[in-house]
Image (cartoon, rainbow, N blue to C red; front, side):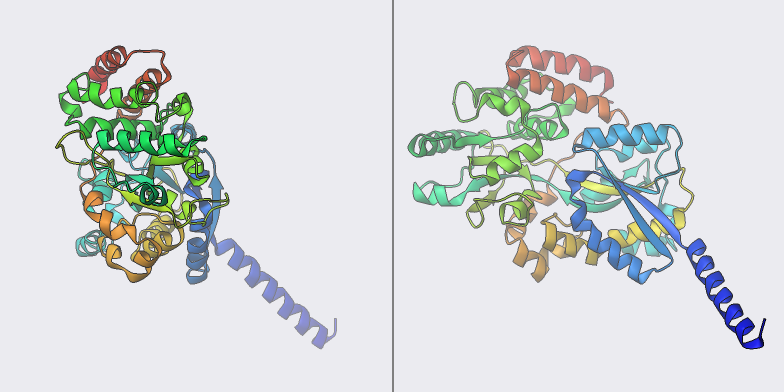
Length: 420
């Protein structure tokens, strides 16, 4: 081989070797999240991270349209001590269960120091951090927080000179008046009562707004008033259809977005969809208002703490890189981008005063007091069973296969065995 040819060959061989070495050195992190969490909002964040960290690549795996379906998949994977997933996005009610099963990696040791940890966590709302802390250890970092609110058609309220209802009685009267006048297929009140996690929150919000306290029992006057209202909205008040027993969270969002509901309970993500940032057409852009959840009598308004958290697989092989990524995804900049582009409620307090966030979501400032007072579902390693009990009985009552009294009696009986 001629010297010049040999030199070219050697150079080419060196380039190939360097390229292969670089590829071999790159770390690939596999993230699991549900399809309902709108991966398209997260993809730009992943791209920014990869650009800033060229030695780390991100592979996204999606599945499960509901919190329950996602949890079922993760339970199967993690129970087998599978290391194929590095990071997972979980409902705020899951860290306690995952920590008890030793499926989620404790995160405290990945901060540089106690001061570093305190400085990073101090900017968050208490609820999201509390949801990720089990037995004094941190098992997840907040992606975003969430709460349910009352969405309403402000154009229709203005048309009929009606005020935003502050009590459930006011909501019934307004819904009956406007649906009768409008005719057609306009629903007066839309909620979720399918056997899903959102139904647990709908029940608790009605229960709390009647003065209920789950630690004191659900088969109470507050339980009967709360669950009774959901049932009566269909039969007695005729402001909701029988199909509520089949309604899931995104079903409610799509129906309201199509202009077929006057009032509806839903999470913060729905706002961006209603305004047109959605794969589905919207007929309500610019016509939607958001308010605190109504109450019975003079009880305080209560909403359910929601949101999703980043956890690291305890069986994963790339935990340092995984922590670097979830720390970035929990940063103020990431929270701002998710709020602007997806209407996700920020988990960081300062973002409720951010001009870009408030321009995209002007209702965030007014609802902030409700967000910081949001109430958690029971924090327990037994939560999957607690949730199943509540949503099953609520679904049965709303669907008409059980009376309110029978559903609450069975709910109480089963909760007594697991609510610890």
